[in-house]
Image 1 (cartoon, helix red, strand yellow):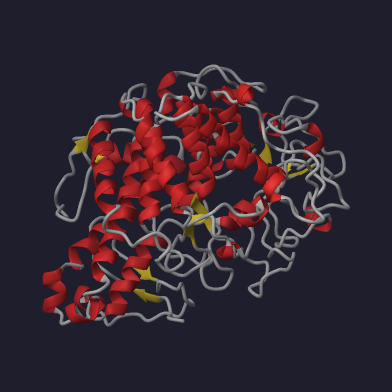
Image 2 (cartoon, helix red, strand yellow):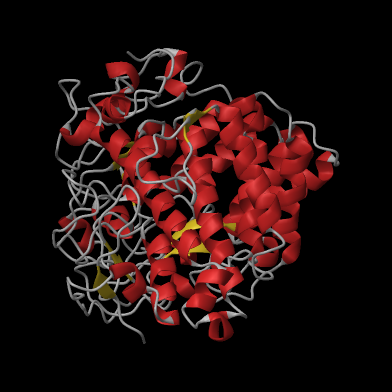
Length: 564
């Protein structure tokens, strides 16, 4: 196992990074001599290149130079735990929707919950933007240095000739993913690539330009990344490019006014038909500490309680969703260390059958439930579904609102990892095949050239797995009711509800609601717009503002409509 090394590299927009090996080793450090030329020192070996590529990956899940929350964070002036990418994206994609509530008012979280953010009052909006550009900068740095001519000059071409182009493709893919998210969240944003100089002021591209650049990059990369299922764990292959293309094409009508549902169906079907990442036999196994053995995950963001620690990744998804007393009712994997500051909104709870929602102390995994995705904590003393108290206020106690407990820091056999309970070892499933099934079905219902019966087949595959019925039945687990539905039940609204049941907390909900026209109007939930039971808000909230600090730094930028 190679080690993570602590180095300093001069890159555009950033001054430092740590490098992590592709196998995500331990946190040993090695400061470099201040008198050496840092770039040449880092890139003098193949291991140095692998380390920088690993940092491109790690930038989406780690937060700083020391591991955990040890200080020396990536973003100057940001709270290291709050400002990690996956955690920030939860606030933007889940907290601002019908899924979850947090009483916290710090770092702009209350503005996200109430959909009252501005360009200056939501720290997590700024940090998400900065994280994405930080990752782009790392990828640009790698692409500048990982060229045939530079490898040849450094005497590494012969050693790396079989791999370096795959490394380049992966860095390009990570950059494309970041631009896809910027397109989704902020619309029209600055464009920088490996040819952008440090002193250049980036030009702002339109949302259509960002969309087209990303799609064209992915179309090229599908032939440049490794074949499906042939890369090492934690690194992407062609299936990831197909998956992201399907997601972008599904949202093309909303983002750039173009009907691309045939393409969304085409690439989602390629993901499914590749069979490189088949559906897990048990939905619950996707979110456990040994999910590195789960074949469904196309692109995991790697976490490890000893070697890849962070409070901003799945550590947040366990600890924020549970409190100490819950560990006495089931094995959370974090003991008494739960924070207990995230709860389910009533709309998420009501997406499931009421009988499946209830937590049974004698059936802590929910084997007796029909829909095994209905993972809620309802058994605390005085706990109720509503997210408000008798005074119509939010409360910091965990009795208002149900906990959501599909993330557990334990293995399939209910054991805590050797790394212990201080940090989680659950890899975050950024891309997984289950979403591709629902993407293909939705694209068909929206007009893609395929039969509705095929869409029904995709949805029923997801539901049979959720109910562990039909071909997914297992001994000792309830399968008396099939999850499958009839064609007359399959509508777009059903797809939206099914995506909520299948993908809650997986960072897609805001995007889904916008695509269905139900984010700002037509579907309200607890505390939307500072109302206990919610209200409509202005449509400009479908895009987040470009942070005011970025507007100050780049006079060429034009703010999104509706913001100052």
